[in-house]
Length: 318
Image (cartoon, rainbow, N blue to C red; front, side, top):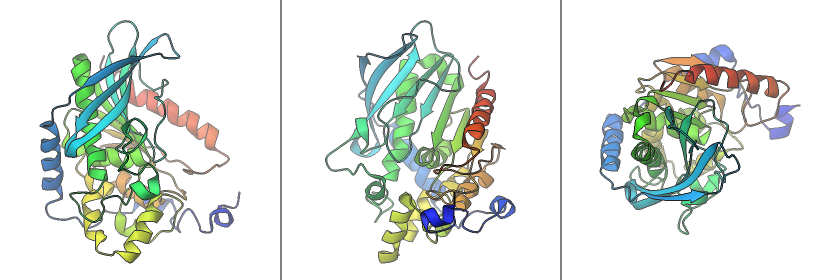
């Protein structure tokens, strides 16, 4: 496959492996940490108004429920909850989704006897609202004129509230709570993990929202292209983006994270992914040849990554 011909640009963006591993952090606002800690504290004070509905599942070994709860900013979040049909779960997981949304939970996670919650970000699927966009290009610029109204803020808060909902229903998994997210969910996870001490381990795959100054220079086929074009007409949003940089946030994460960035990716520019990976204090790195595109080693790398995930989470909660 000639990726440059397919996409009209080189999905490596001219970075080789060594250059990617050398990508550093962007400048950050002095009150970055204060902004996010304050958001987390505000979210913790929001009553969940938790609603639980039993659903018919396709796997008799697992219980399937829908849960709805409130989060920061007056948003109502819908999520799926999957747990063992018999006995108590040993661990818990909050699972983020990509920017295509989520229309079903994943019954095949790399953890044993897990209670897993799959929240939908504000605007998507179970969290749809008439006033919120449900496509990545419109969602990623919604409210972007202000750091206080940007849609990524309640999207991050929804992950914290999902953890609270999960622990309310299954308090026994408190010592074994993990986060898993890829792409959009990877970037949100990096933004969420530093400010919530309940998570003990994380896993981020091809995370987005890393190093916005570089992202704004990169054409792509992903949500970053919508931000790049919006920025061209509204350069003042660059200040807002400094508060939503996943690489900056990753530098504050103090739990172990298995991170899988890609060397080539037409949707999420690799230097942004590696900015997140490089910023992590306690990481295990799994390099992917590519992300968001087909490639020859895709099946074998997926199998190897799955093995790494199972090892990474082995023993959590037991």
